Image (tube, rainbow, N blue to C red; front, side, top):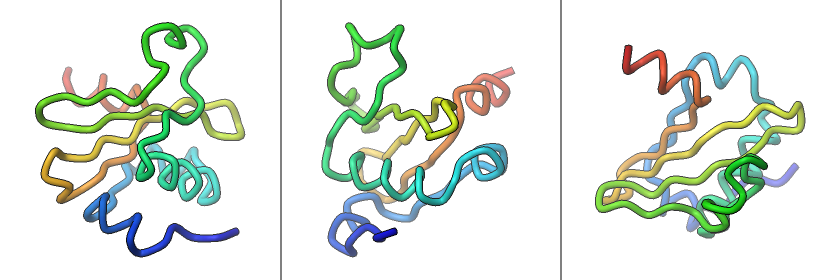
Length: 99
């Protein structure tokens, strides 16, 4: 397995992963998705959102992309607008945090 080049990782800032995502996702899935995310590629978007999310989503504050692990689990990568950090999380991690 290759790892992302330092120039790609530089665009992501510090990379963080939630405990839940770390327990569910393989290292290879995370590394490959981070490479796509850093290159501004969409990755494998959840099928039901395919029409609305053909490309990564840019907001005024963050760069967001979705991917799917080899075990079928969807996950997200969110990079702050200033590229200071990227967070990898599962959709339920975000939902649980907001409750």
